[in-house]
Image (cartoon, rainbow, N blue to C red; front, side, top):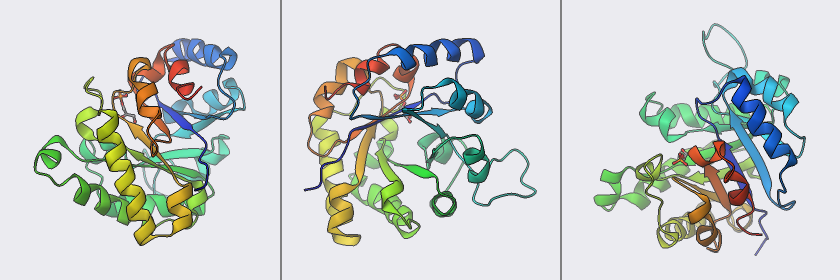
Length: 248
Ligand code: 13P
């Protein structure tokens, strides 16, 4: 089995200002972050340039969304080319808030994944079931279908991280149990083995997101198929460092 390096993303969502983010980035730059862990901050697009120039180069920068083409008459959108021009390396796509607050569907998300990868960005592709879907027993069906659309659009799996973020766990304080996370991650890896390749199943990082805190991260990180985290609220707090170091 290929060894997968731990990956921790901090998704700042629509939070912070220059003053608070300067403080946050300053503390990350001087923190003792475990070297083997890949750390990426997903920042509001207006702060991409600022974040890239303020953060230590060992910390990656991601946009939280992008559009599916390079340029044109798409008021309010940003392209992967622009994200790269700001020096950022990653983009988060398919986040639950994009799907559920802004109505993005699988087809659009797939097109964005394809274009971001063609443009040379790394993609943190997000999937996850709602509470109603979990309660109806359709978790697998939902996450497999979302993953299928992403997979159809991936040209380079080496630049993809898959983030399993159950919608019911996002921002609710209700973290999935280590067993719940491991169960879905394991099934996703089996799906990748059956539908993509052994190599991708072994090497793709599948990270968990949804109310991860310093208190819950270690046990989650000890699960065999949990290769890191996508952290929302706690990524704005000092405890983010503990989450980055969850495997230390
Ligand atoms: P919380 O950690 O605030 O639940 O957010 C998770 C998330 O959506 C990360 O992308």
